[in-house]
Length: 248
Ligand code: ZN
Image (cartoon, rainbow, N blue to C red):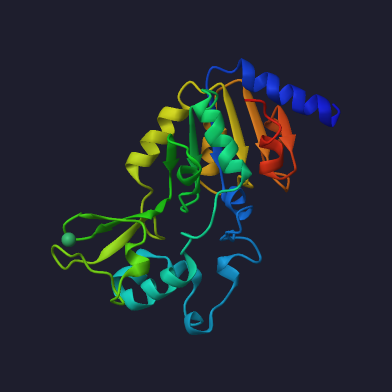
């Protein structure tokens, strides 16, 4: 198949589909300049001097939040502030597809809220989001920038004095039930699954693809994935570039 034929086929598949779902990994956000946690130049490999004694997994764990909150919040504020980062063409295209009735939902492993920023509504964030915060004691919700703007080292609830934490799945925690249920509702009866920006080696990414029972699997990733041979179409290119060629 030539490149032109591949894109023609991609458009045909999406045009004929009654339910299309997008599953995205870190690669969707790296095009906005957000480092991939697992890549060589990603967050986990940039060792900050003051955090040197801790592993990156510990710094983003529930143990760190509970036992060493000063360290947890310092690291979180330094590394996970993404409020100034803008969505890229992939985010915008997906939002446009949803508005046009061509996309039932997005399941994302990213916690940066960029899909909503681009205008998408149906988004299941299976690892939570840095855009939501809540009090660990009374459950009161706090806005996106609350932790980043807090004047105290440990952000506190204005109502009860409890600690305000991000609604992000930390190491040692279960994935959020409500988001998983949302993801399942998107996957139910999906005819087309577009997977972008993930090598599909870690759970839950691999799980969604292996459970997919629809008719067409499309993979967009810079590097080959374990599921390339099972896909109808595979693009080893930028996600923004490939999605950009979908006619809405
Ligand atoms: Zn509270």
